[in-house]
Image 1: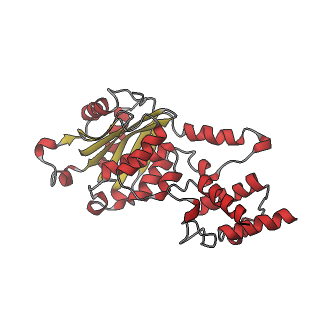
Image 2 (image 1 turned 180 degrees about the horizontal axis):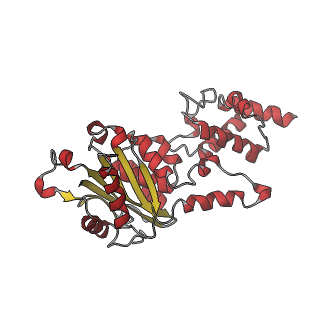
Length: 85
Length: 223
């Protein structure tokens, strides 16, 4: 799990161009949107693409994203659950 | 109409009026834009999500408007923008095209796609400075003095603006070149500009400024 959350942090920083933010700056339980990293709706779409491209997970209903992208941990849990299937 | 400030960014120098802010900032476009962002002590994380054209327009406007208090001196609806360039958003269009060329590896990036229009650069400036006046991005082969003059003159004549940002913002791969002017109504400008510093907004002065800052009139931004 920790390996996956660290990998996700690096991927999020890269795809969202989060300049000046290092993986260690991201708390795995901190909210990604709103007060956390301050991401916006375009970033949410970019995270959907990230899951599809890097983990072959397709989110059919964008509304699901709200729960999945709550934090790095919820993203990691979603990936692990999906990979078990 | 008076030009109360003008500024320029190119690989040789960054300047405001006749003052050089930065000499030979960086030959690499990506580094140059980042160096200038740091040099200006800006805190605006969204900058790093922009495409190079919007970054260049954003930084140019930042230099042009710094300490000019335009949004306190004019209603935001009366501040307009007329921007020109020759390659539109082609650099980002190509990047987007590359991501959709291969049907087997089809992952268009939403954050790239949103910059596949040149007027997004005007939007980024408007968001940053809370500018709500009329704006247009026009594609011309070269910095077209007459087009800029006529469009800005039209906005002022119709009393649609009291202040306008106008000029050239070009970014395409290794090319980078901008020259923006701040144009204000004469009455307001004369309250704080010394008589000897007054530059009338007319075609001959626009041309003189372009020749002065766009690398001897060249528009490709190559040193």
